[in-house]
Length: 237
Ligand SMILES: [Mg+2]
Image: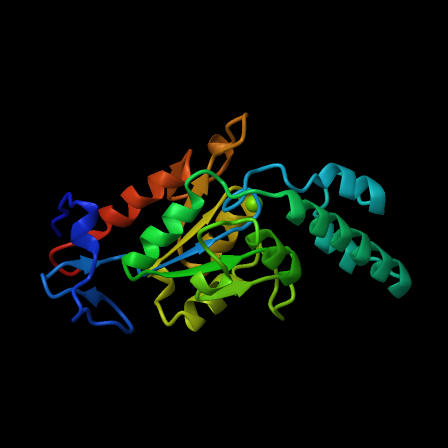
């Protein structure tokens, strides 16, 4: 296998680029290893800190060391569950109104699109809050994503790998050619268990990368372009 350092421009496919399962082969002979990028949403495409989980947990009585969705699902009383869900949704919507794109997020999405990669979002948030948040993005909209898997989708949420596998299937790519990008351990765990290539976005004030076993670590979204470019070869695999 030979890896070539290439300029961004070289990655833009010719009009004859062949799309479909397996590799994408370009007329100039270049082959792209990565065909799809699946992003976590909160703290990855948006600036970190939008949702304050410690306040949410306190409000619904969830212990600090338990994930919110699982805690709610395990509540014995249906009324309690309904109430906790609606409190969570209120927090999400108000966070969505105020959230902003992470630096470089919009430009990265446009870059990936121009290079013919498929792009998705996988989030433990509701679809409504994701759409609300995307209204605060100036240059991209939900239409720029091939799919959005929220918790409204009937698939086990992260850290399960089921959603990542579903995304790969829907985007018609092999999961091994999919980059799973996120800022939390659940993102990396879900990608790993599905067989995707994982990228940890280490963008909090305190680095967490030592405790997270991802294939790549980046500190800002811009660096993802290098990873995508590193997967461009002139010969198979
Ligand atoms: Mg996140």
